[in-house]
Every structure is written in structure tokens, then in C-alpha cells.
Length: 160
Length: 228
View 1 (cartoon, helix red, strand yellow):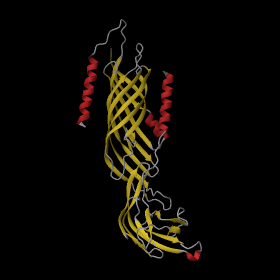
View 2 (view 1 turned 180 degrees about the vertical axis):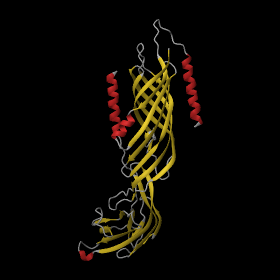
View 3 (view 1 turned 135 degrees about the vertical axis):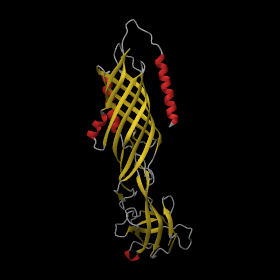
View 4 (view 1 turned 45 degrees about the horizontal axis):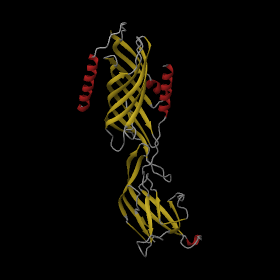
């Protein structure tokens, strides 16, 4: 009987020590998804060559450092109501002289939504407006979005 | 609410029917103590000393109604700070539980030990405060937005059922040491807006499936009424 009690107590202590077993698997704060299309044939996806992306005053995003891609997902700053991104491409060769840079400015309001215990709160973006200084980006659509609350599909089509 | 009350009354009636059954008399008559047993859960003050995020108090009581059946109840308060990766919240409130225990242990002579199984209906009223949170940006390029103004939601409540298994050992005359383990299933839980109840006093951590676990270590004393 005494042995049984000791075993049960031991078991209870082991059991009580196991917590924090869950990891966040749900989608959290959405990123802005840009998809690049050919300006002459606007339904055809066209890759951007040697693309580098960085936010104003920050380092280049490590995943987007001289890469050739047809779509990118970039985070928006949740602490401010504006994020400015610089997109640099070089469609000729690696020479600095051939670099072309465009700037896009995204304005928005933020709201926080609870997700789950392990994921915490995510931020969603409302009343989103997008402007560009053009450069290598010839046009884009849409220029405003009511909300960005997921990143399952592209938010903005960019023609170049 | 009424539904549970009715089923509880049904259960009590069944128990009292059991109590009416005559037990076969042996040639040597052994007297068992029947009475009101009152105790305290010692795990809660101990946890409070070890873990500064937890503080609580729980009283336990039971009343023996027949050879193997007891009406059992627990009453307590609990304040718990839940620290997660992105949120920090406090639950604070009181709870009570009522139900029965069945002693499945066949005692020798006048021994009074128990290996029991039981069932409880329990309810808690509490408040939850979201102390602070950092929004989950999903990337480390920009930092998350941190809120540190606490948001309190008062008037939250929960109702649940518990299945209990445990032991009680009579160490001195009428003094019992006990351990029990409980598995809890939530019936209804009021959630705060744009947040979630992560911890309910008495229920403990609320898992994704709205189930919970608990254990307690009790020291209790029987106030003997009658011996039969």
C-alpha cells in the first residue's frame, strides 16, 4: 500500500511537469503578397531578375537578396501606419550600372485579432492604400484594399 | 443549469436507495465511523510557495451516507498567472464542486482506507485580465506591437464535470491523508471578447479540446457522528 502511494505521488509530479506542449501552427500576421506580371501581356506571370527588397532604413530581407522570383511576401510594420519598401532589380547582368530601383509606399490602419494560446494575437491591416514612384514598376493593381487578413493569394499585381 | 440539478438529484436518490440496503451481519460486529470529514488541499499552498504565478486555497468535505458511498464537495479560490509566448494573463476567482465518491476498497476489520472513484459537477465564477501581449508578426524583420495596459473581463463563468480517482489513508484515528486525480470536461465556458479563457479556477489550464486535469493532496479529519 505504501509503495503504491509513493508511485502515485511520483506519477503526479511527472504529470504536472508536462505543460507548454503546443506550438503555433495557425496563420498569424499576414504579409503583403506581390505578384509580378508582364506589362505587355498582363495575364502572364513574369519573373523579376536579381530582385532585392528592403524597407526604408533597414537591411535587405535575407530571403530576398538578389533572387529571381515571380511573387514575394513582405512583412508590414505593425508599430506604424506606413511601410516604405525599395525593390531593386537588374534584368541585364550583375553590373551596378544596370540596377533599377522602385519604391512602393503602403499606408494602413492596424487591428489586433486573437488567434490561439500558442500563437497569441495577430495584426490585420485595414484601409490599405498603395502608391509607387514607378521606376521599373510600370503599373500595379489594386491601389487600395479594404483589408489584409490573410496571405492565401496575391494582394497586389505588379506589371513590369 | 436546471438539467444538471435534476440529474444530480437523481443521483442522490439512487445513493440514498443504496443506503437502505441491509448488510449481512457477521458474528463479530465491526463498528465503522460515519461522519462529516473536513480537510484542506495542501498542494495549493505548497504550489504557491514554489511558483509565484500561482496562489490558491481549497477546502474539501465529504459525508458518508452508506458503507461505500460518500457525498463529496470542494470549495476554493485560485489566482493564476498564465505566461505564454505572446500573452501574459491572470485568472482570479472562486469555484465549488459537488458530487459523490464510491469506495472500491474492501477494508480489513475496522480499517478505514479508501480507493475511490467519483463524479463531480463544478462551477466557477472568475475574472480574467490580459496583462500584456506582443502581437505575433510571423517574421523577425519588424518587431511586434506590445500592449501593456491590462484589459480585465469580469463576470466570466464556467461549468464542467469531473471524474475523480483517488486514495485516502487513515494515518491516525480519524485523520486522513489523501491524493486524488481528476479529469475534467467543460460543459460551458464564457469567453472574453477578442481573447480566450486560458485558465479557470478549479478547472486549471483549459486545453484546446476544453478538457482539463487536476490533482490534490488533502489532509482531512472526520468529525464522528455515529458508529455502526
